[in-house]
Image 1 (tube, rainbow, N blue to C red):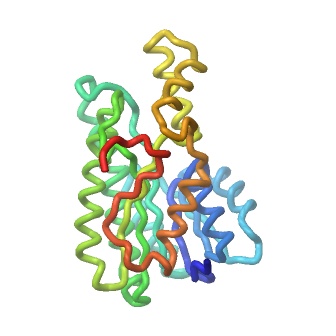
Image 2: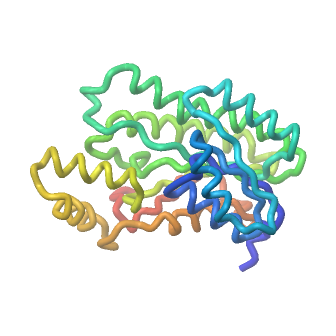
Length: 260
């Protein structure tokens, strides 16, 4: 299948590791000009070196704890380079723990990094997407949108807010040829998952191996996802072939989520 992505421009957030990096690589393989964005310049340069050299790839150094600075840096990049047809919103998850134990700053920080930054990026990128009558906004969230996950109280709360923001944005931007969709990863082999497993192991007094096996057994596929599997779903949603898919939550979780 020809995804018709050749020479499209994409901004991929959190693209130095995990799902973000896998997505950048997958889009680049389809002929997309990828701009990486994250806060660690050394890691950005390392990923940039892995992308196909015959394309116009680049990176932006930005900290998602400061939405105004993020908007300024991306706006300047667009003025000096090009606009973007594709935006992949992807930010590391909030610290785990019961919601009752969360302090207010945890909610504020997560809301800023996830919802506020997503919002300013859409506002900044949408004018070009409208002019091209082609826009793909994909938000990497979590299956907690459909089924809250134990021990991830702040994340459950913020992810739900992002999902409703996204659905509302999809309704408003659809008329301009812009789709807004959410990909909901399940347990995926990333550093984030390793940290969650270590925390479960410590709290339960079981070994890391046993905690890992218990999580895998909760998935009908009996394994964790590879980041590349989630990246493939994101790449399809970014394509011309997905032009009539808008406003959805797509779990990529091996069947773990119990709800429809």
